[in-house]
Amino acid sequence: MTVGIPRTEAVVDLAAVAGNVATMKAGTTAEVMAVVKADGYGHGLVPSARAAIAGGATWLGTAIVAEALALRAAGVTVPLLAWLWTPGEADTVERAVAADVDLSVSSTWQLAAVREAATATGRTARVHLKIDTGLSRNGAAASDWPELVTAVAKAQAEGSVEAVGVWSHFAYADEPGHPTIARQLDVFADALAAAARAGVEPQLRHIANSAATLTLPAAHFDLVRPGIAVYGLPPVAGDFGLVPAMTLRAAAASVKRVAAGEGVSYGHEYVTPRETTLVLVPLGYADGVPRHASRVGPVWVNGERFRIAGRVCMDQIVVDVGELAVAPGDEVVLFGPGARGEPTAQDWADAIDTIHYEIVTRVGPRVTRTYVGPPGGTA
Image 1 (cartoon, rainbow, N blue to C red):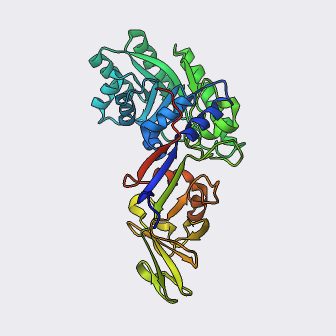
Image 2 (image 1 turned 180 degrees about the vertical axis):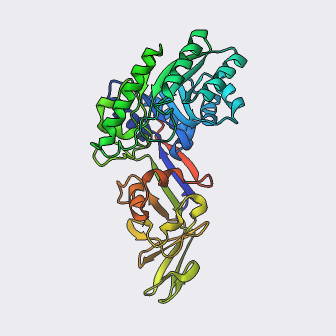
Image 3 (image 1 turned 30 degrees about the vertical axis):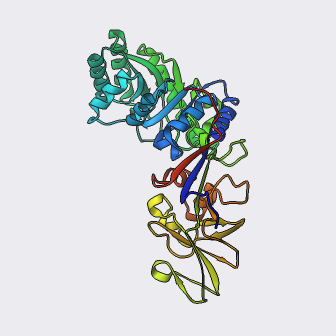
């Protein structure tokens, strides 16, 4: 029996994270904001942040304010931007201003909340004004932008806020050459001009996500915001020199021989076509393995690829390995960098018609995170 392999484990290569950031930094004159939202895309918030900084990131970005505050609590001192918050988070906004966390503002109610937080803390709130250039998600509509920048100019004059940045987000940067990209850049340019007319001239202009960081230098401006690419998973086809940082694996929990014609897992959607060996793997949909990967999710066992046999269960999956020699405790890999022949997160995404973002971010808290290759450096 193999010993030493945890029951379930996501092995995160921090040297890969640092190296991916360094690779992108080498390709731009802009500063790099590494996006570490969603617990570092499932890789771990604080370790990923520190690795990204070691690779050359001078900014970090999170969606929710709580993650930015967690980074501050961990001693991370680089500039932070958080951009998704609601009217019910006044206390959180106040704590963010007190902790020197930059906040995105895309409406007058958000500006009012930030001004109140500035008054309560006695500090100047640092804001990045977001313009909706065509994603139709967050950000001020073009029709509301003049009112917002005028209000920000007044608040800046009184000293309650500092307009650090103007920013937006692409809808189609993962399809280089798509006509919406040029249209969004035009709207962004108009927004910057309107802000300048109102007296708001930001230090940082930023719109480039991972795809634009890798493929569209004209959109780099003063700061780029790679997210998924930090973790070695490019959102566009091509060889960008990135290394996937996560390997999801488990120890085989059970190995047994069964006869031909045996039903496997709930509903017997898989029936053994011959006498064979079944391997039980202690990972299931409670750990982030998609249930719709039933019968199609690729798995690597002792140097060979197989597919999940039958349905994905809450805590486990079954793999039919035929005549392959397997022992309890042997390593079973769901995905990794692919260097050994194991499936990748992209292979999983292809198998279930989704994106690799979802594959890595849904890996649950029951799975132990093990960090290797610490890149050094401090935050």
